[in-house]
Image 1 (cartoon, rainbow, N blue to C red):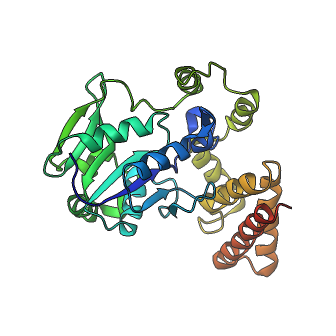
Image 2 (cartoon, rainbow, N blue to C red):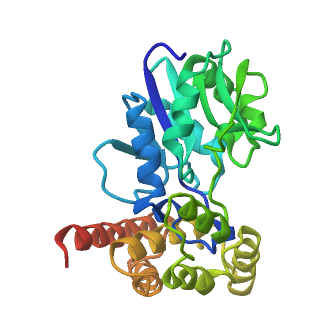
Length: 295
């Protein structure tokens, strides 16, 4: 059994490409968003600090938000970014797409750990290093040795040398949601047999042509070449974050012309990278106020 203080890192900042880029942590199972299920599981396990590696997706006073820089750097980069906000003896690492997160965390919490922690192993014998509890000191030491803040590194680069005990996921509590079929199955298991709502699927199909990272990179490269732009001239991650924030706080159709407005304002001010960041921040702040005030 895990003894000592516990903090939690929840990973929620991925692209959800197989779901067409929808905000996967906000999809609901049993009437509750997947992210809320993960936060509840961490809180029930006694986590003192719950850090979510993602842009703010919803209001929750239990959560501190952090984002790897630059965004979409992968789960290792998310963990590295979140670790400084934790100070407990143990750190729960959990993805934000487990419909049965509470059961998975309870199983980990009850297990006898190895020197550096405990991790889940699925029915096929595959280790699940992102569903685990690690000794914080060991995890920090491993993270400090990684180049570039862990960006784009495989998870094994972070945890390969950690001495952890494996616990079998006997009842498939750590099954995640990667596809619409996974979501439908999770809902069926919760006693709510239904297909993914048409609105959710529509959100996916609207974006399916542009969301794979390699397609975005290729398109960004084509734009830079055609218009003689530098990387600072076309901050892809910054614009994507703006679009997501506006879509969440205002409405999805507001995202593209809000990005245009930010670019226009920055260009009118001179167009430097700093002016672009300031314009984007102003639009994001306005969107947050719009949501907060119920406009």
